[in-house]
Length: 224
Image (cartoon, rainbow, N blue to C red; front, top):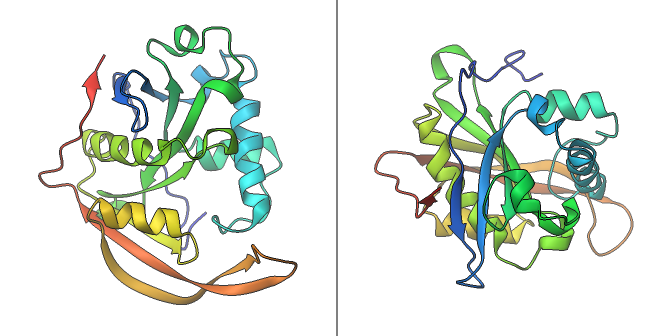
């Protein structure tokens, strides 16, 4: 629930096709992005639980997301899968083929949602939330997710993106959106009551608002 009430993604009669993206660290490795919903996720045993636990752990760290508790599966499902969801799998093929007998921890490079940031007359502007599991960090997959977002979001019908809260201490995210030419539309002082990364306790942290128009955006994807 937002300040505008409940904001749901548009109904999808079909889903966007998978795409393949070259790993930034190894030219022989590709990451496949899959547009998927919760009903499809549920066909893959353990995948929903893995996505849920990964996101809940990130929220519990209290450094990147404003939520404080998403341990309830229904809360996670309503929040994440009330949107268009994309999951990145290391290797090519469909989700099952790409998995190749590996655990989800081994093959899920990241995942994210895309949803309207505002309702009604402003629903053409979207928002997204990204997660790279700890086991996959340092591999450059955050950049892969971000570039795929610039590919997929316009194809979902959105004309621009707004990130409402990118905390200034989330240096990797700030640098990534700057590199992709997002505009710093504003700074919100003391926007988040976050846990201290270097010790116990909490502190108030400023947050950037990032904006980008999708006009003339091109993604460096390889369609499957």
